[in-house]
Length: 122
Image (cartoon, rainbow, N blue to C red; front, side, top):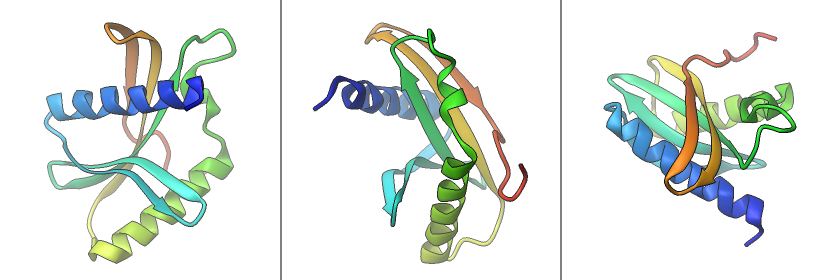
């Protein structure tokens, strides 16, 4: 596995533990639909939350969360719609971003952006 893929997988695992420590219930990891992948799908009380995890080993070229483009947001919202249809979900949703700068297993910085974006707003 390429180093950046390995760091990404480690970041997703860290994000999952982080969310669970905050009382979230992680329902899915790496849920795929067509060309999109939702890193984590969780419930925060009664809110269904779609989470994009961005992990980098440095912020030398910008913060991890800055890598989320409008195209990526559209892919995520399309996949979220498909997921909601699949499970029959018709109540509150939210799109979050978790940004991680990963130095090693014991040393990393994590930021959680709730309501990071809303479908259709640019």
